[in-house]
Length: 180
Image (cartoon, rainbow, N blue to C red; front, side, top):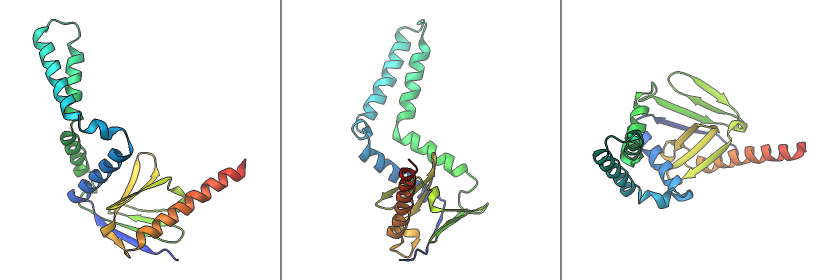
């Protein structure tokens, strides 16, 4: 089947909330973070109280910085604060509020935003992640594209994109094996 799909969406608050929630669901399912997640508020509260008590009882201690660091870690470890900081950082980006178009063709992908147009082949994508509400494409480390299902045209494009990425990954693996 010939691949000709398009995704158009806007970088807004709902988009970044969806990215964060999808990544959070993925990591809570596939990592040991899930077991720590429910204990995290208690651990944070314990670290804050411990640091405050230690500083109050022994302020002349030679290592108050350890307790200050522990309380700062506890504060920034909470979900609400870290997600708020992440989303606030996203809102400061120059592309916030802009419309993005990603066009998926048989042998290339075109990413267009208000500042640039990027053209790359399927071979650039190192891995992908399918979520209930969308699809993550990872072209390199520390970079990702999130495509919400609601933005894809036609509706069956998600499965076609997954097939194209998987075919590219399989081709890359077979080329590495053939080189030996």
